Image (cartoon, helix red, strand yellow):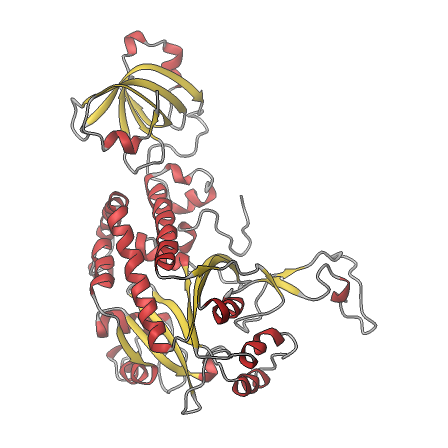
Length: 477
């Protein structure tokens, strides 16, 4: 007999005389009705036990969390809420679950409690739905790029370069932490380290991806990146996943087109393929919204938000135009913003980004041509000498979703920008080589995958959209 999944059986309209299924007990009531889930779907299947013909010692072991193996008959359900159910013919307990100590009991748990039990939290409806959606979005990312002629490139995780110039990186070393070798000047001698130099966990695969784009044409990376920022917020992780396409012969306008098309595609993919999980998460959010004051409630439901992004053209606005809008806005004039906009050149905060998207334009926004001094060294300098061909895509409820740019392809200009920021040419000699041998216009962007998962699931804390969050003072599991 073939082992079935809950998903297969619930989508099956036929009566089957023999089925076999394995899963975990969600609930067991009236000594008769088992709600069984195997992770294949948000929905449980009801399994009906004839308790008069079942050994009492077995019945006592059918507890929440127990793993069981059932053989039986799939019949039309007598009760409400499900089309089919299984009449149990044989039941084997594969793994017991002590009801006194099992943490995930059938009741409402706080997300904080579930983070402390992250190894078991996908046994709840919310987290199983979030992680199935995360998986589907991952697949959609690869499918989109594969279908559009991109090559998938694995950027190194250990690197000697800092793409962002952020300086907040995790050092990788196998030197003796208590007694490291020292130079004559008393500094740590990294020439004796494993790689013979200082190395770190990567903050971005972009620079390496650029090298591949300049030979393979269209490439993307999708892998873990690391930031050693001591930032304990609902929007930051120390380890997160980044999607970074790089395309040769593409300018900033082409980069904006690519990012918009890509975002619409992956969101449409989960709307089509993960509707049950989205419906569940939407109803969860609606219940949550009812507890908030009217002024704090979202104007759109989860699925409306996804449709909103898919159905609207993203509004393209220059940074200069955005600053004018913000400077003259009511919250700015009435000093309602935490960070008041007074002058051109200010770095925008998430409150400004959300005002532009949610209040002013009421659609996703792409800001472009940012001041050079608030952006990274590799972005192409515009003819005005003070702005760069950068773009950020802003989403409702999230703020910045994508950051990208046309890259600086002119060797001398790039050298000048690196010198101004004290970036050692010897460290990035290979990056400069790209500008010496067959340089050309090229562009790309970075998208923090967890931000995308947050948007698609409606979750408000980034720690709830990655299996095992890594944050300051926390590397559990």
